[in-house]
Every structure is written in C-alpha cells, then in structure tokens.
Amino acid sequence: MALLKIARMGNPVLMTRAEAVADPTSPPIASLVRDMVETMADAGGIGLAAPQVHVGLRVVVYYVPASRSDDGEEAPLTIMVNPVVEALGTETTIDAEGCLSLPGMSGLVRRPTRVRVSYENLEGDRIEREVTGYHARVVQHECDHLDGILYPMRMDDLSSFGYLDEIPNNSACSDRQENDRGSAA
Ligand code: NI
Image 1 (cartoon, rainbow, N blue to C red):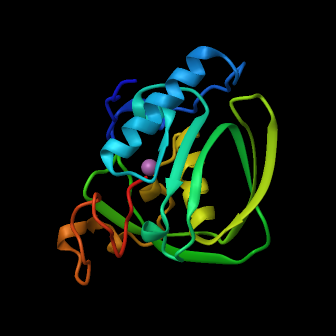
Image 2 (spheres, helix red, strand yellow):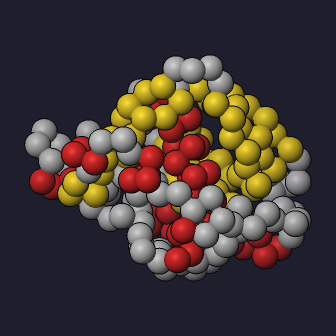
C-alpha cells in the first residue's frame, strides 16, 4: 500500500481522457485500487478517480459516510472500472461540490438527480445500478474526471465558486471535517 500524490487543477493529466482498462481483474489494477482507497481516506475525500493520482485509466473509487452526505444516505465503498453514466429523466439538482484536485475550494453545480451507472468490478463482472441524490452527484463528479472534466467546468454561475473558508455560513473550512458544502471528491 502506498499514498499517491494527488494532481491539482492545471495538471494536464486532469484534462486528458483516460483509457479503458483492458482487464479489471489484473493484479496491477487491484494494487492501484488499494492505493487509491488509502489515498482517498488519508486526504479526507469521498471519491477519487485514477487521473487524480496521475494514472490515465478509467478507475474510480468512492465512499460517502452518512455524515458527509447531504441527504444522510451512506454510499458504501464502491470500485468502478470502465464506468458509463447515463442521466435518467430531466430532473436536476444544484448542490455544492469540492474536489481533492482543487483543495479548499467549493462551487455550486447543477447535475441530473438520477442516473444509471454501469461498470466493471475487480472480479470483471459488469454491474448496472440506478442511484439518486448525493450518491448520483458523486458518481457523476468522479466519472467526469475520466473525461478530463473538473467541476468548475460544469458550473453555470461562477459567482458561487470560491475558497471554503471565505464562503459565509460554511461551518467548516477543512475537508477533513463534516462540511455544509463541498465535500472533496
Ligand atoms: Ni474531484
């Protein structure tokens, strides 16, 4: 196990479309996932995509404890290889996001409320599920990383973008604490 260095916005690896994983069951992928889970936990994040640790592969991990979820629903530790996300319906929700690649910052992002996601697990099984609310937001944020998209690129009003510790009514300025807004992913 190893802690991996997290790329910050501006690094080309974050702006590049990641490559599909040929074999999700291969030992190097298992090793990468172990390191990503450890790095995510160490950084106090709720999600991490491989490009954020300088690996241009379509791999995502996330875990949202109930205390960090805006709607109080836990999202268990999930590993997604080669995920594909599709919006369901036309309903959208606007909510705060943060990102380990933009430390200390937050912004409001509108996203589809409900999505279908299909991915491979480390056993090579193709899983399909529907997720909603904050869980759906995390899935979309992480999968965006695989296409070189960071959340500010999804914002339609940059006036809500800023440093967490400057934003009024924000209860915490560290992403290691429970936040009112902008859990880092
Ligand atoms: Ni992120």
